[in-house]
Image 1 (tube, helix red, strand yellow):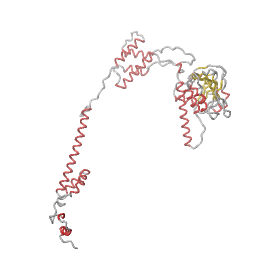
Image 2: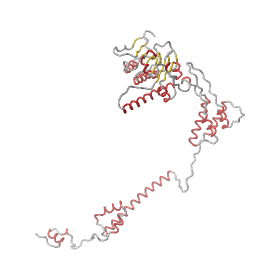
Image 3: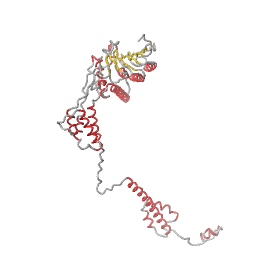
Length: 444
């Protein structure tokens, strides 16, 4: 790398906690985060992200020596680094604490300088207000901390819950411990340019550096890069266990496999033994199948105890047995209870259609009967013709009205005109009409 060129000078009125330098060749750049992160300490992440986007390079060397700062500025910087086309190699030169600890999670490779440290802790803030406002702020911090714990878990292994517990304890990791925990990949480089003691902000943390802090939490098992892939034997045994569990949940265990299923459920395979952290890649051999599993497989497959078979031959016999047992199992249909009639779908649908037709016919029959009852009542002089519709509706809403209608005396309503038979409409003279109605001439 030749003499560095500053991409953009620091603003005179603000503290510049970062700087970016490119090589004259333009193929790589160094990005330094040296100081507290965010507008509280000087410029905010907006300017950082804009300057980063201007870097048209193939590789970025991210150098970090920071006590952290704004959570959201840190998240924005982390995501901007992830989006950048360049390969990002992060080097912790002194301290990557708080927000700086998850900014480096964006790198393709994380290196720890000798004597460098990483610190993780729960998010915190200054707040004031009433009880409800403070409760909301606490929930907000809890949500942020859970999200950050997920970042560590994605990089280093373990669960988000385990990393959250480590954050609550404010965990400090030395360079070696950071590599062992999976927070970094290797220890490299010369003596760090900065030290933990250079930051007065460290005093606000629970512990003043790794030497003052207890041993940090470590995720179970070896570093993700050093975890061996499952051996062929373990994979086959696990596959057998998965197949048996699926078969059991679907239609019950096939005959003769209960003991094998129990053996596999109790000990599906021999877990990988924890491996010490290392910066070099070692070739790992396959795990040995446990004696318990081998004995259970031989018994269920029918291999005599005295027979001498290789692992490959045992696996071949297992595959053959599984293939035989995988044949479709006829579903067990329970016999219907006494008095129950079983219909197929077509017959059931036909029965429903006929029932609907019968119901419609019955409704028409009842409507016709009500109409006939009302007509009989009109013809008998029990009700006037103008009340037909009223009585039809009354009988439909209350069948008990049938008895009321039947109890009415016949002839209550005249069926023929009485007295003058000519009808009032036969005379057009007013006097004549009056005399027809009242039997007396109309007085003038």
